[in-house]
Length: 160
Image (tube, rainbow, N blue to C red):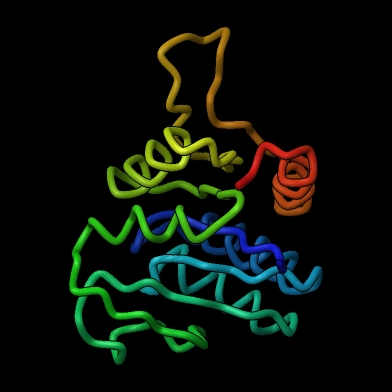
């Protein structure tokens, strides 16, 4: 089965987060890894733009019931009509998650991933840790490091 990595983050983001997300998308596309996300703007759109520029594949799991609401870089749009509940579908469709920035929706996706044993790599996002000694989200330095760490965890059997 081909690898699928979720890229999660805010529907609105800073210019720096957008650049980082686009770089992650490019790295995923370059390596032939399918990118799944929430299908809207911000981090999601920037990551998908990068993936498409690098020849990658993108899937958007949308909160609403209209496929037309997907960002222009989504190749497969899945309209759920589920609102934030679709966050579970985004992470459960992946073998690893890369989180970039984000707000409470991103935090919920991180929690669902960790609860289901899906590794989360973080770039300027929530730590999701109650104990500083036991960080749940694995920090990455940059886009290449994030993808390298996600793939290493998947290969070691830590991904689904």
